[in-house]
Length: 323
Image 1 (cartoon, rainbow, N blue to C red):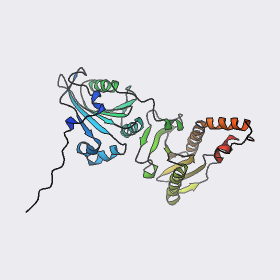
Image 2 (image 1 turned 90 degrees about the horizontal axis):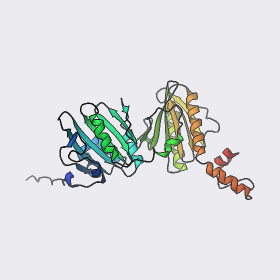
Image 3 (image 1 turned 30 degrees about the vertical axis):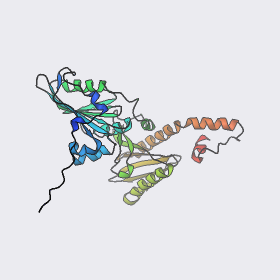
Image 4 (image 1 turned 135 degrees about the vertical axis):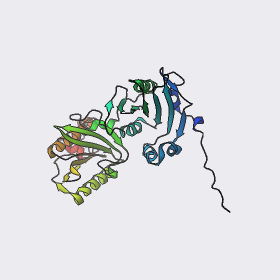
């Protein structure tokens, strides 16, 4: 006698609540767009039921709280759209999920915090939310719906602050990304803030990894160095770059300049001019130092108060830079 498997506990997504529901236009609030049916909310532990087994784990890495979906058609019947609002615990993770969709041809829009359009979709990062619209219609109808939704949402103060460590000069506008998974094809370089550079038509990728500690950062740099040690060729390190650094090259991995300063790992990867990588790394090093000038000012004040000009509470590398 065969025993039937126990039925899976089904969830009525139409009854699940979420703060994102307040951003979904009802009935004909969005002027030419009409909500076809009641919106649904998919909680984080059921994302695979809607996104599938491939996309769901990717969103889980950014700690997606829930997904709210509304389906629309135009009043004239010549357009359709699905609005998906992914909610996250903070704006950094929302930016990360949004930024991973930046591959391929895209056109940036004027919807803040940041947004872009592809052939049949619009993507918006807005505070702790990532909004994805798919569909189409005549003219700019899809963009008008996207703007209506975004205008209801709270914006983030700015892009994640870690991007301030990367140089501005040569940075490709809108290329900033945050990957929880990997960088340069290496998973140990995950949790990285990334940007693309164009230096005289030399395309370079830069990353900053805020590690949990100095030791964790040192381990990441050593692991990256070991990758080139086994596959490529190490070059001479650069004097006075970070607390530790290496440069290397490999025909497949490309050229790299990487360094550690405090708990941050910074790397620039390209396939042409090594000097371009060195210049970007040096610039990043100075930008990171610039964020700790207050510590240097404090050291000066302590020296004036009888500390013989030396603040032993500062790490050795900072005292050396101060001289």
